[in-house]
Image 1 (tube, chains in turn brown, red, blue, yellow):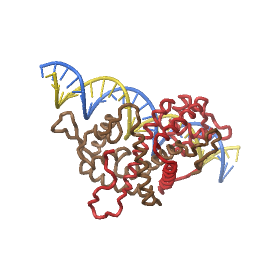
Image 2 (tube, protein in one colour):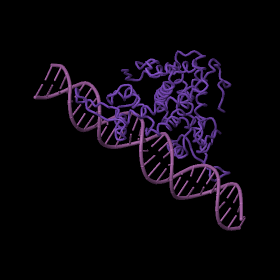
Image 3 (spheres, chains in turn brown, orange, blue, green):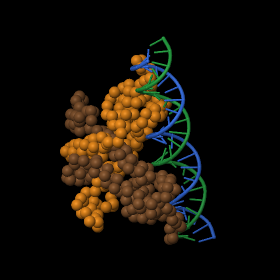
Image 4 (cartoon, rainbow over the protein chains, first blue to last red):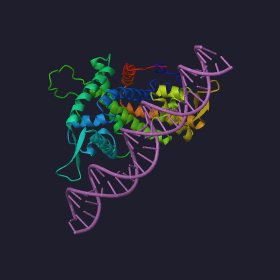
Length: 166
Length: 166
DNA sequence: TGCGGCGTTTAAACTGTTTAAATATTTTAA
DNA sequence: TTAAAATATTTAAACAGTTTAAACGCCGCA
């Protein structure tokens, strides 16, 4: 942390806001990257690539989701999900089954191997989170989580075009 | 936000810790993704791709860094940086110049266009950060930043192999 | 029955990422 | 001084993620 500490000179006129929003943006990006880096180590032990963990986790919560649902939930576009699922199917973590009702739909299910993987990475993520919050008090962790979620909400509702929550 | 709110049943034995570290990991990943998504819109207006912003920002702080330094600072491997710099050089944001002292070294400098870009994205990042922290009090923003940095520190010092800070 | 809408998939094009190997240059040692 | 070791960049090959646009198939309604 040999960057700058928080408040620079602010030689321009408006000395109103010492906290730079840019710093926060930078910090969260950096932190997320570190987290992902650390996490990807454990993930790769389970045979997963970064980004695939979201799929199995999502499926663990509710099995048999459609690619479209998964894509929306995970914040990626449908073709991305198709690709990811394809790879994960080849790896044996999930399998596709057509929906009985609607012929357009494909549903994605966890395989036995996938279920096992969920447990494994669940533990890894837990450990990773614990490592990340070393020295945090209960309250701090809770606060961080809360602020993060509010921020997520702020960002997610950005007025650009289509922002369809489920 | 119709996910789950924070505490599930916890039907297994240990009802010790209601705060799941996994949730935090998930939240930060999600938030960072959203941030990056929003940010990339502004970035693309300046002609930058996600990931390139770090380079110009880093260069703005200290011009004439080597690819190796940049890579280390930005947490990527050298070949990645070579590629990124190559592209950015083609785009006209930076330029490479050999070091006078050491023939092995290449140093990367911001071009006039690159400098302009720094200003532009600086403002964008600021706006983006402001948006992200809508409704945050000064204190909350500060707390978040602090917690994020502690977390970054926790994660960055992970005992794997070579972890050389500058 | 035909046609529009919806969901998945395919295709094409980029970017980012890594490891391993190649190249060039500096530094060290004999 | 000459040869070997170390350092830094680059190249190459291989994967993964991402997006937009277009194709394909199925559902529903008129």
